[in-house]
Image 1 (cartoon, helix red, strand yellow):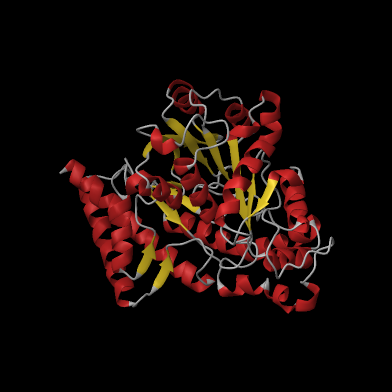
Image 2 (image 1 turned 90 degrees about the vertical axis):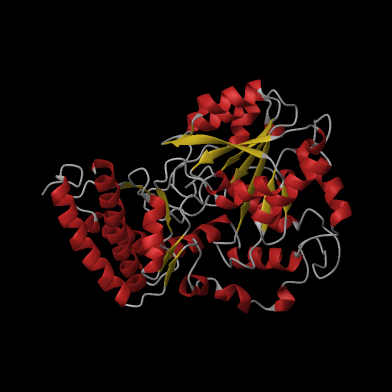
Amino acid sequence: MKTYFEMTIDERRAELDVMMARYESEKKAGHKLDMSRGKPDPTQLNLSMDMLQQNPYDLIYTRKGTDVRNYGELAGVDEAKELFAELLGVKMENVIMGGQSSLALMYDMMIKALVLGVYGGSKPWSQQGKLKFLCPIPGYDRHFRICQEFGIEMINIPMTDEGPNMDMVREYVENDSSVKGIWCVPKYSNPQGITYSPATVEALAALKPAADDFRIFWDNAYYVHGFREEDDYLLNIFEACAKYGSEDMVYEFMSTSKVTFSGAGVAVFVASKNNVDFLLKQMGVQTIGYDKINQLRHVKYFKNVDGLRAHMKKQADYLRPKFDCALAALKSGLAGTGVGKWTNPNGGYFISYEGMDGTAARCVELCAKAGVKFTEAGAAFPYGIDPHDREVRIAPSYPTTPELYASMNVFCICQRIATLEKLIAEEA
């Protein structure tokens, strides 16, 4: 069989007629399917329901006697800080427990930097004129929306198989003091599922910023979310920074949003002791403390890091077949066409599909008209603009397996149509 790129224009037109007939059949099927967000489905959420069965009277006092129902413990209960410090390979003094959302923490840290400044900085970011942030692409749309909310210029940094293009990162960071930070999802990145190599982490730690208040926003959202037998290795950035004396440069975030309950997890912030002390003074004006009952509830449920990892093994066993289904559907649905390529991650929540330039928006549009919703084309790029219009984020976690198979079948048909239309238009 010829690939679509080897066909004559008449062969492409004939193939397009076949695909359009299949597409019209799918439209008549009345699909109402949603592949737009990477969130757990109800069955996956049920894996954590036992956490709510704990005796509430076991969730009142910490080991040092603090009543978690009352005010206090601004940085969080020691048990929770200890658990996540061990998990992330840092000291307890470097951990602050937030609310239920790491995204809220990132937003809050951005506001604090803008209005109040950061440790070691000469003045707040908002008093320094035009600001810039580096954005590895494709990336997490909500990171980009935070920058856009505050008028921070975003600079695209292409991702490689080892993480962001460090030659570009180094050039911007070390020569432009208006560059204030970089977004990073270092393990199982959203949406490609790439884990930064040790060399990339070392290069980030070794940066010598032109700005005295540059920060790496290290969104370690998928640190425990491997679902293959071989879990990717991520070098501890704070250990790397210790070699260069650059620990103050990093803000690390994670949460249990996709470990237990997406709407009722616990958020974790990790930074140098200098940063922690500086931020706790600011936080003391903002709040008297976050939900310590929930923090203790999570610790009592997991007991220790081994317990947390055992819980994540259940999550992995549930998610892996869904990813296998989506990947198999892509392989069979696009076999022989030469159309597109896609990632095959070992963890995380997404598959990144990269098609022919100029086809992503059309594919997503066609899918929507057939009753299958994907994240908007361009969502994984600053300002919602994919410069090549070729990337589509696939989120296999929420649909049931039959829904997932149906969704991917529609996607493959629409991707074929979009590619054929583009090729025919270019040759006409």
